Amino acid sequence: MLLNVQKIEKSFEKNTPVVKGVSFSVQENEIFALLGPSGCGKTTTLRMISGFERVDSGSVELAGETLSSGKTHIAPQKRGIGFVFQDYALFPHMTALDNVAFGLTSLPRYKRSVFAEEVLCRTGMGDHKDKSPAELSGGQQQRVALARAIAPEPKLVLLDEPFSNLDAMLRDSTRKEVRAILKKAGMSAVLVTHDQEEALSFADRIAVMNDGKIEQIGTPEEVYYQPKTRFVAQFLGRTNLFEAVVNDEGCIHTNLGCLRLNCKASGQVTCSIRPEHLTIERPNGALNGCSKGIIIGREFKGHDITYHVECNGERYIVHTDNRVLFEPDDEVVVKPLEPAVVLENA
Ligand code: ATP
Image (tube, rainbow, N blue to C red; front, side):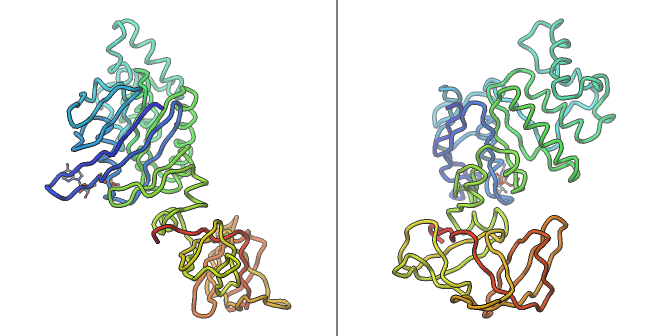
């Protein structure tokens, strides 16, 4: 394990904690994301790892060394951690090369430029080494910022909403490039983001945060397809929620018929099914306990279509591929393709 964060807490005002006992670990060469809505405490958590903020309690260890605890606080510049900020924070009066060379204080002066140029080449910015930040696009500045962060070969890189100032197209490609650069360099990283798609596509594992706490940690597939809580199910994308009592066969009876569950459960449960785990058909033949529904809305998105279906006064969202064609007011039945996921503490 490279980074070990144990039960860290932080209050800025007395008795109003904004980070409430957060624990997680990051492995060597792992990209980890802290994902959550604005104000949930992600940046404060990152700032406690970086040392820009002290912990009230709990501990932060990097490669076995305690960086923060009730008694210890190592200064940010002595932690062996690189940072990439939302606004890149490049020195405006310096060239890209000088920005990267600036932090290479452990190297003799004559070697700094050579090494800085090498790292700029690795991030695809070698040809722009003599330009100032004002002469670079947002995506290029971000790659210089990354080069600056990784050049001193830190054990860990922290990225705070690093792609949010880029437009949609550039964000996508920069994200892919940055991930590839980190993986090639064999570096571990912690990304803070409120963007679900970004966390799902960029990280190896994700911690979903809500109100100062982590609700779930898992791979992108786990947190998306096996959410543990109502918050995680709803924050990671659209979903259909069902509240029902588990019957003797271990299923729940709903408007969509009897739904199988992803695990053993009993009593009253709340379950989630992602829209792409439902499909719609024309109501031919026996309905087998399903209710007929009516298409009340349709969002055509090119490669797929989202349908809104009303069934016995309940609304469901169904994603289908673009060959499943229905019109508003068409009569349909909604069928599950996968078991419903039982949520904890819902
Ligand atoms: P965002 O995505 O909007 O940056 P976040 O999840 O990163 O949100 P934080 O920036 O960690 O959230 O803030 C969590 C809470 O702590 C917020 O209510 C914020 O107002 C408060 N907070 C953060 N820094 C300070 C500070 N230096 N002094 C007082 N309150 C602070």
